Every structure is written in C-alpha cells, then in structure tokens.
Length: 197
Image (cartoon, rainbow, N blue to C red):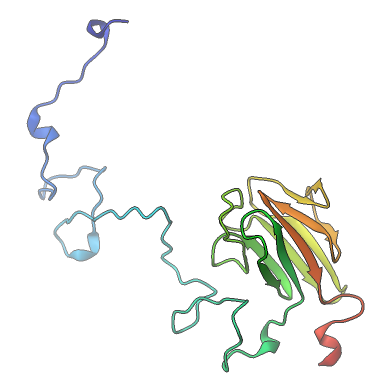
C-alpha cells in the first residue's frame, strides 16, 4: 500500500497547539485536571517515578509515618508479644542471597512491596509486588501451610509447582521467581510461644 492510498487526518494547527491551561468551555476528556484546586481547571503535573502511588494509609505504617520493619530491633513501644517470630525465610540463591525475613502468627503475605508482611524486595522482578503467595502458621495445629496468592509466576515447594495448600516443614526449599528460599521453623510440635504464656 503506497502513502497515497492511506487515509490522512488533517487538523488545523490551532488544534495541535493547544494551550496547557484549558478554557472554561474546553471539555477535553484526555487532559488530566485537578478539581480540588478551586473552580478553575488546572493541569496536573505528571511525575512518573515508575511506582504506583497509594492514596490510603499502609497497614504497616505507624502513627508517626514510619514503615514497620520486622527485622528492625524492637522499640520500647513495640512489645515482642505483639507479633513473635515463628520462623524465617532465608534467601539462599538469587537476588538478596544471605538475607532473612521473619514470619509471624497467622497469614504472611509474600511480595516485593513494603506493605507485605514478608517483603522480598531484593531485586527479583519475577516476584509480584503484592500477595505473590501466602504462608500460614496455624498455632492450633502447629503447622505451616503455603498457599497460592495472586502472583503470575509460579511458586515451587520442594521442586514441585504449588497448585494448592501445601504443608511445609523446616528445611524445605521454596522458589519464587529467581529467588530460592530456605524455610526454617521456630514454632511447631515441640515449641510455640503459647506454651510459655
């Protein structure tokens, strides 16, 4: 097909060189506007930092705005009994090798984002930002169970793809993306923090 056979759209130059500030009768739906700045429309300055901005408070932020870090030393206001450690995931291969993250009672959502209870943000883009997979410690049964999250890439437990809830034991190997993890349990049949309560 030659250039002469193609349909061309020709617009007046005034339409192509619009003012950045819209006129009152301008209702262009493609322009970003800030409606909170008063009755006049003003363009919103776009800042593309590559990250999604959240407009709700993070569940891991305290009143002073600091993000909860499970590996940080306990502060005076944070009692160890609030969320005692029940096990760890240690990165043995891939980005972040040598790092460990702690696990707590109940559901542990795993992802790259800092809002996740278990944040694996060591540079592996194959791990979903939010809720890639979940790990549950059930204090009544004293067992750990790994289950599917919303991650696109598969999770492997002992070399097998995770297709449903799977019990995991201490020293099991898990793989999420390029990251291989060693699971170490503190709580289980022989010990639980409830024993000493």
